[in-house]
Length: 111
Length: 111
Image 1: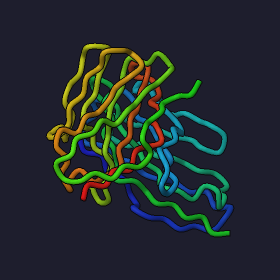
Image 2: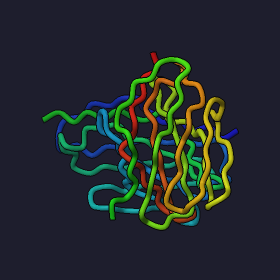
Image 3: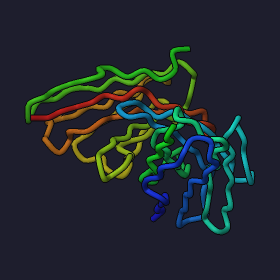
Image 4: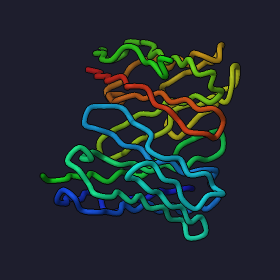
């Protein structure tokens, strides 16, 4: 059974710092991996989708990498801002488009 | 495009009542799915569909029914509500294994 783990569960950094969020999965037979952001009481906003054949994907200050063989993905956030404070979720995409989520990393960026 | 829409935003039910959570998308996506989000449990898949007339069970299907008569709509029915079904419900859609988009969620309380 696929399991997805995110470390750390919570992270607090000062504004301007570069940071890395980690996601690991137990079964490398995935179609894609997607990173989401969730603000308190809100829905999920898609940040990046990495196809299984890709090694990384970039959008603005965000860069996500994927290493299927080791079952790992990282989300790199450059020059963090207070507006980046949210919970970040990674999800592996399996057959039928089903998403299996990690528990998330709660990020707090202090001014 | 309205994207993925969900109604209602909030609902309070009494134990034993039934109701339908509505989900619609206007992006002509084949794949649609329902998740529930609970503190400490993360997001878990209830039911999913890869096209009109095709549905399948996810991780936590008990107590829920779905049908998919059109590409656009994927309603979730609670047959006899129980307090354990108190949760936030999210609907998602995608075109195949591409990026998944989530609705704003329905916050359900069962007394």
